[in-house]
Image (cartoon, rainbow, N blue to C red; front, side, top):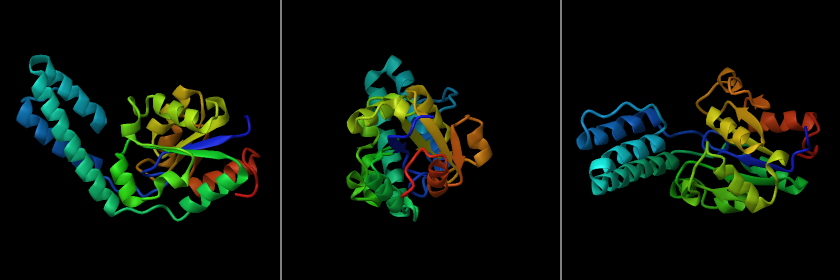
Length: 225
């Protein structure tokens, strides 16, 4: 493997405690959807993609109704994200890792499907933590679409093959693979180590602190982390 020049991190579940109840979010979204379209078509997808799918279904007959549904769902999602952020916190190792990487010359970025307002509710200084912070509002296509990672790497000026994508979900690993980056899974979110291994990342670790030690032992990052 090449020496790592940049590490891009997911946020919730990777650098901060995952406090969003996605099951409750989907439950509320489906209740709202039933008021617009009954019965709802079956679609197994994350919340953002599910909302887009139902909005598109509605828009086939009534474009304005599709827009209204999409807007109301986005307000519901954002309100839950911001509320969750008020009860969240960064992991104890987050500041130290990002600071040590910066001091060692390794560039960093943070990308998230979360809304920027929720992240800033938890970390007002989020833009100062790394070389790049991109929420879902900053890209046309959020992860696992590689555009999310490509844009972050463009901002910090590192090629995908010299970068590492780190996250707590197989979606993050998929994002990195689709972009041509190295990948790492950390079991600090919703998925276990065994669950993360199913996506075949280059590295797996209990958390980001353990991951940094693993990378250091392999000589992929400098030994002052």
